[in-house]
Length: 486
Image 1 (cartoon, rainbow, N blue to C red):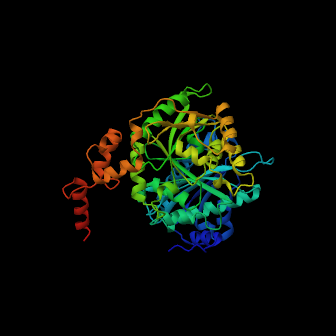
Image 2 (spheres, one colour):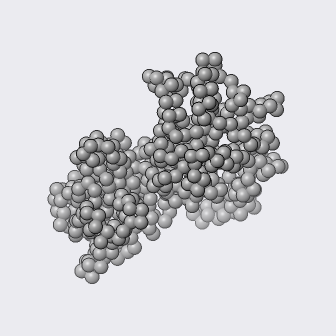
Image 3 (cartoon, rainbow, N blue to C red):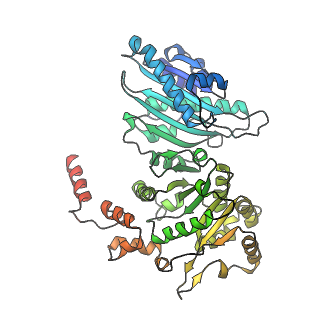
């Protein structure tokens, strides 16, 4: 049972007193803070088989192998550490105590704040562990950003989250959501950010890591989480290292031909920019928490996964974020890559960006937000709208209050905003809401308003309210499952 008031020392002591849990600690980059907590809690001889820290790169390479990228604070280094240390525990202790023990290997590779306080402090933390003696192992891996302004405080936070990870894996494994929430016990999002988590292994076969990413954002542990077109979770900084980001935001319920037209033509213009390497461009579809909610209700997790499945089927990376304002999104993107990025927007979104009421909380108002939005290496590509009189509404005839027009002209003249020049007028005749309504009524011809494979996925899986009769394979399967559970 989850007890959020259980302290770090109490957690470490409980693990120490459980004679089954036994393994090793390998910590690189900010001291051996997690192991230290177990030693200080008392009874550590019942838990700790070995602790080590190979700070020197030559020593580290000799133990775990070299990194092709030359980066030591990365997921591949962590996985090599976990594999090496867990293999040694099994090899050396299986015969002596394997029948009665739950072996583990805890590892982290981190870079804490330097003396000049000029670097970005972050790290990878993982646990490989058994839940049954002589049973298979599982992994839980997280990536963290340390936000304290003192090195010693960052070390302390690393020790705490390390203990939380171990305790959660052994005592909350039946509820991954609880395990995730418990990682922040005795901490706060102001001290540490968790922007990636991945569960793997036979005891977590039913865990959908995309939902775990959603929970990271919902719980405020991070502002954004990312996964690839294969559905696997990604750490944003690694995924976008030396890459151009081209991002489209929307409800995407579902993605329609208008979105595809926007992506195809917007991508072509972005890749043609003189300071963009087409081979380094990564397309991202962004779903905000606001866009995932319907009528201010709780997020429908199935609906979320349905949208993600469709986007991934089109080869998109998907980001979940808590960035309602575009300037906050751009500030985040600018931390992930130094290369130029692009945003694909419709005219309504551009209108929203120029809505001054959104910036009342900023002392500098709209100018302060624009200083962030347009001072970075980011360019906006604007997809037009079709007016009721069948005329095109775009940047050339964009209407604004008189006092904002010079600001808009400045952005146009300085190549910060650009119309998407090629577009399909026929696709623009249908809004996403209209397409969704036709899907729900199964009106003839709705399939022509979305990509062909998207229409097939919707029909095969009865998505977005598509009416399936009782003879539909999916409905038959659900009935059989319901009867079997009685």
